[in-house]
Amino acid sequence: MTAAAADPAGTPPAGVRVPSLDGVRGIAILLVLATHFFLPYARSPVSAALRQVLGYGWLGVDLFFVLSGFLITGVLLRARDDPHYFRNFYARRVLRIFPAYYFVLTVVFFVYPLFNPVLQEAHLSADAPWYYAHLQNWLWITRHEGPGWYGVSHFWSLAVEEQFYLVWPFLLWRTPTQALGRICLLIIGLSITCKLVLWRAHADHLAVHLGTITRFDALGAGAWVAVQRHAGREPGRVVRAVIAAASLVLLGFVAFRSGTSPTGATTDLRVVIPTTTAAAIAFAGFVWHAAGAGAGTVAGRVLRSRPLLFLGKYSYGIYLIHLVLHPQLAEALRAWFMQWFGFPSNLERAASALVLMGLTLALAVSMYHLLEAPALRLKERFSPHPVPQR
Image (cartoon, rainbow, N blue to C red; front, top):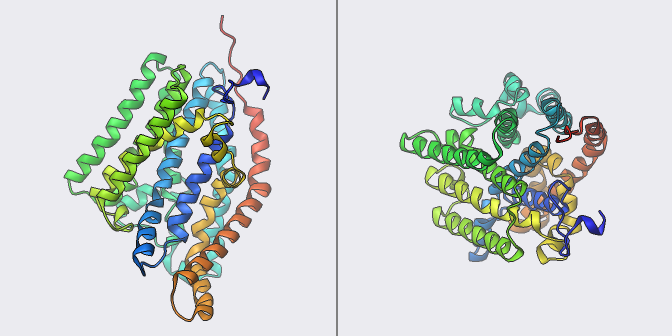
């Protein structure tokens, strides 16, 4: 990017790929890995506090939702005059998502069971059509129970995003520009209202935690930020920093006031509703700040750091496979490390988590270069070409 393409602070203009947002992806996947891999035993006040903090890493999914809403809305807004608006958008989404997703599904449903008795007993293959159709969240909601195998328990969020991609382009296509912000706020309000109605109706927690509409507040919040930036309503650096800091304080307050059990945070609706709603608002502020953070700012330097950019680049593959590897392998690793330490300890858990992390990263990188990258190169054939304005 030339010097003319950025302001003196190094902030890229709207429509240009922003490296700091790859850093946001890196933070989101770190949060998810923290809660799934690195929860320590509560052996002391310090480890108990660390478990409490890491236990809220499940909110990394909400950060992914906000970021997806922001990025997808930005893409759609810039392509509204494209004569191939729908074709290009859906072709690019298919090329980005489907190769790795369907590869992992095929391994889980039809290869793993050949070697894994646990999966044979779970009869997961009978549920395969729901996963292939991106409807697994509704399968679990209607059954009032999660999947038969823990290794696919994170796939619900992929279904929510795909369902969002299915409807959002149509809502944006002909909506007047001045009404777009109100549409986003309406979606956020509808999502929060659905959560409260389900809570008052004593609905199963899965209906709130995994429901499509009930999680649209995070996607809608990200979309609202994209609409503001598209309209040129960009706050200054100080205002962005205040928004981000205030939002994260809000999230922290709600999370720690809502409950003391990280496990309970995903089942108790008194925790799920305020925490996910606060996360939608907080992460929207954070993404707004990150999108405008120049390379010369502290936030820009942190978000452009090599570890976060690496994790962000491979975050999709990491998310897909990290729990697929986890259940039996984690147990075997912990048993092996216990022979070294002699008793269950946080050292044993940390060592097994690091091995799992390394293996997950290696497989995600391999999958990216063998499956994702070739498909991504085809996306250029479906780049938007807006009709010139007369």
